[in-house]
Amino acid sequence: MSVPPDTIHFNQTYLNYRYEWNGFPTILAIIPWIYMLPTVYITSRITAVYFKTNWEQVEPGKNQYVFMVISLTQISCFLFYFFNYLLVRLPATGLFTSWCASIAPNSWLLAVSFLASYTNYLAMIYPFFMPVVRLIIMIYPKRHMKINMIIMRIAVPFGVIYPILFTFFLIPAIGTCKQLEFPYPFGAIWIYYYGPAFGLRNTPFFLANLSVWLISSVVANVFLFCKIAHAREMLFNQTTSGISYKAQVSITYTTIAMIVFYVTNGLTLLSYYLFYGTHSIMAYTMLARPFGNDAQACLVSWIFYKTHPVFKKTTVTNGAFERRVNTA
Image 1 (cartoon, rainbow, N blue to C red):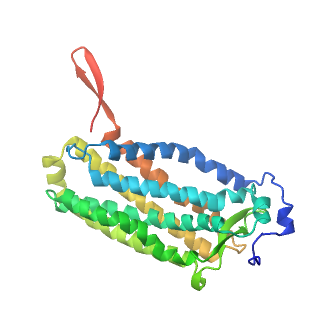
Image 2 (image 1 turned 60 degrees about the horizontal axis):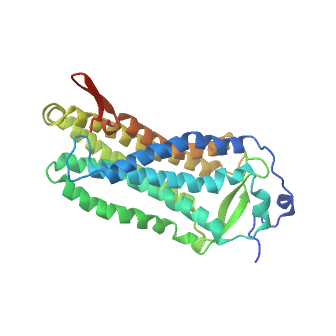
Image 3 (image 1 turned 90 degrees about the vertical axis):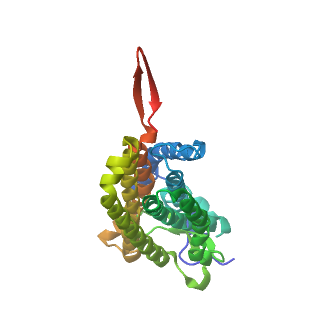
């Protein structure tokens, strides 16, 4: 098969490349695991609560669909992190440059690019349903479980199908390896694609979706915060226990943290779209883009875990005996 232009396949210079410590690309590939491995553990704790809880038994501070949305969001974020790591950060180290130059463009490389794009959309979609679920709880306090059940039965398959609308053009493409542009050094490569349907590209779709989901999430959160402010006295002083109040605060912090992902991802993606391939100082923002993507996975998990009462324990004293019990 013919070699796509601007790729490293069968290029003798890259075939002769031998890995050497290449500075910041290798550092950028190592650093994320320092915070991602503990985050995976925290995410597993959150997801375990969802699967192990008997949701037919009402407990203060716990809501089935809040934990469901958090779990879906964080699993999507980690999947996006993993495939994006395979797409850019790992090949940028130069460890696989010579090997990639020795093979032909293929569908396995395309699968990495496709799944990175697909999971990126998943990570955009599910956070929107957090304020929606909470709004339903506020507006329909007696019927929210039934309504949210219907919403999530639609939301879960919608989240799975929706990304295909913006990644279908990759299906006839082929995966390739390309040299990363400035400021990356020679030998730092990434996985890309060649020959998409209709000549379409990912970036415009990403930017449009980020804008839509950011605006939608902000609008939903504004309605939610207005509703909470209006009902604050009744909600927090009359009908809600201290545990439920702490849960509400925790979920509020978590929801705000979710919006960070849209903002950081959007700004770095826009900078990539405008400055990648140039020698502008703004091209360095591409180095920060993966960390902006990591922000949601880490911030949301840790904020929710550290502030939600279901993960806290209190000491209960009874005579000479003392025991530790879950507050939720």
